[in-house]
Image (cartoon, rainbow, N blue to C red; front, side):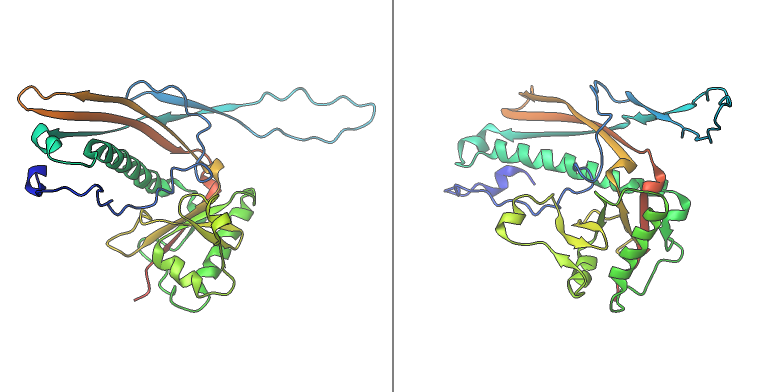
Length: 286
């Protein structure tokens, strides 16, 4: 609706803040930004170099070693292929009849909307995990999450998959939907994080620890019409993200008495170690 539909005689000095999802997948500690460079336009590519494993031989005294091994390398391309924008205006009449700084609030909302879109995009990359690192499938999701202890046990199973792929135990995380977190709260093995001192240092969405994972909660967990939730666990080394707000411009629309702002957000993400992620596909208990 147009803003003028909401002009009262006296405006409140405060705006009602919109309800917002916690931004989880794109934060440091969940995804790395090791290859984030200077991105100037959509379609730019970040090149990621990878070196193959080095072989180890047995040394025999007074014998020659084998010839030096020629290391092979591989290059992965992180394509900056996502380009999202916002573009809004505030009429001069509205601006003259209000106390709150609507432009400041609108900019905050626009920045959040871009970040939320990027967060959901990162989560959608779960399809690129190693094929052996999935528990349940879209065709056959796990349906026993309502059984006592089942949510915690599935976290243990996710951790085991990562263990078998030599993923470091330090720094592991899992992102769960609110209902899954609610089930964990009923399990005494789940360690919730609380206290004003602790909360000051928490990552966005962090709600506790269990089975070797930092637990983060998000409404951006991929799902199919509130079923088949793809609960992603892993390590920051698994995937990489690069972004840049390429342009933010304030302008006056030619045929309006209004202030307008438009912004462009460029980014891309890629799984670089598919074995460092694992996914549980599960339905919410009825």
